[in-house]
Length: 335
Image 1 (spheres, helix red, strand yellow):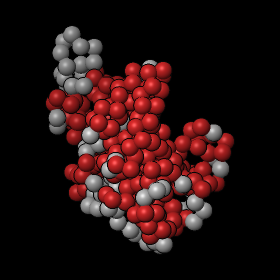
Image 2: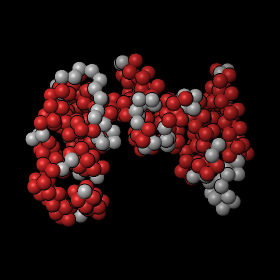
Image 3: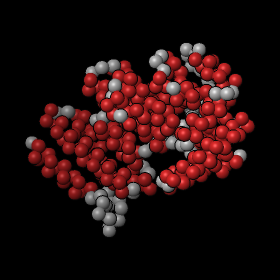
Image 4: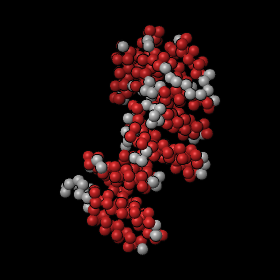
């Protein structure tokens, strides 16, 4: 209790205050406590709490205690024999975290996959930042080596971890309620799909990543209800992917929630989306594309819905007639 409720919170508070000297004192106090009383600590509880406050160095000290635990050693051996999906038990947390810390030195790709599956199963005892650190930390500290073949493999492992932990049925509800985590997965899915499309390699992987993105972004997917979504980010990503109909669906969803629609940054993104897609739709008239006509009609209706939002004193209030005139002028210039 003293370790988790007194010492570890000091590390979190000092880290937030960015007080290096005080943080070092708190770290040394926690380290000395573990060295002296480690045999009496509940490793699972202490490691999980340390992960919650991002105390990476303390976790390493706790793992040194685990090396003297016969059950820890047996768990390490049992996991090393696994060649398929294995399930996490709280009593094996120290073994899971030790495997994670050794991820970069592990050369067997199946064993690496076992490790990230275990980490996903262990959420939230094992936190995403811990997996991110081991999979993408090298890339952040040394971009040159991070872009090596193994560096790219490790980054892809982190994506697989997110896919496991955020799976709509087999993942964790608490993870799917983490908007930041869901947004990160959506970004990696969308941009990974675009990068694969540019290189014309691994079309199946590109399709899978696009499917993952749509499972979050599209209301046509029943899975979208499982996620807490950042509509601003999803709107931007759908435009990057040139998925304009999806972008309009997201804009409609924003307008359906008046409180959300009145957020200035989100509203401005939505208006920019309408203009970009509308101008593109007008360009398509040259080739008699009926899809462009339907798209423009839909955008004009959305402008009508948005008309007058805000107040007279707000510079971002929508003037639907003015927007329509802007499209007409663009059409005249185009033809």
